[in-house]
Image (cartoon, rainbow, N blue to C red; front, side, top):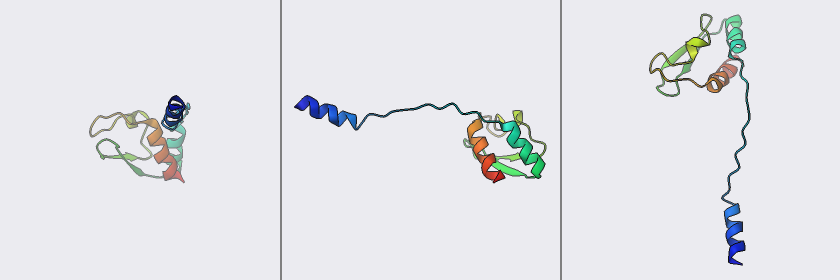
Length: 86
């Protein structure tokens, strides 16, 4: 009986992690920014430094923060660009 109660109690503490592969086309999002004449300011999630996204921006310049040198996650940047375009 104690074993059953322990098993049921542990069942509530189990965490199931699912992984999903996500493909993000930053080039297409940047092209939409260029075509729309939009200038957006993305803030580095590490230092908060402003990163200007506009017609002269390319994917390579957005891979690392020009202020702190931290790597910027493509998914975070894609989410920002999608929200800026909508």
